[in-house]
Image (cartoon, rainbow, N blue to C red):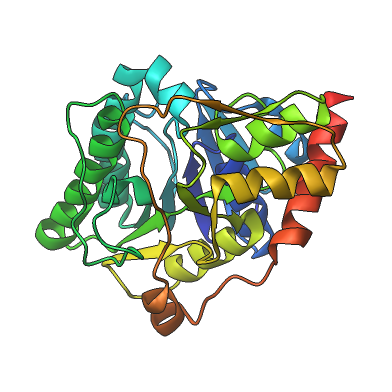
Length: 315
């Protein structure tokens, strides 16, 4: 392997976003070490990298000590269950990867004098009382609700990253990721994009929780990864929202999926889960100013690519 290539470690490297990030890093000339324990990751997401001389995979749970020989330049800490189905099913591993996993990733960054980028989340804002959400908003989170295992793990991870930045002078970045979609999402991961697309393609009713008036903002994965890569190369240390500010209600989103797939599905309403956010929209002023970043892929284009991917998975 060429020693001139920067070495990047991606925890959660077999996940939806971790695998797309890996592809981008390789395209940028990095050598990549992917780490995943396959709790929610999938080997299918990285099988196209088999035989790539600049890629190495290690099966490991980063809640345990991380040992890596050689130089490391960047660590992207993406390991964590990220959908409600996953973190409600795996509450303790979610808390551990946000706390112990982040601690271990920061320990590796300290030992290797590497830059660390934390994949945080818009869930840090909880059910927000401020709209749209800016990075200086502290959030409205229920620490003891069922979603608290994810929300508070990420909030603690952010606190730990800033602690290491201030005390150990580690070069750290924090990205707050808003709803992202695209190929390699799991059909049954419980999030609205795969849920609605899967239901539409199978001709089933689309299940809306609540009255459908709650809003989400959907960002295509390539746009998100572009923002994350730009953040990793910047000298900015405060959290940065990366997401698409185009806001739509869940009911509008369901109607769009029915329209684009040509499905004959109806909409069914179910009770709203506990602490489900009523609104979600990123203020991306900081990303525009600091990173010169904004999303480019429009909703129609991105959702068609995602539907095509799920069609192949269902076939």
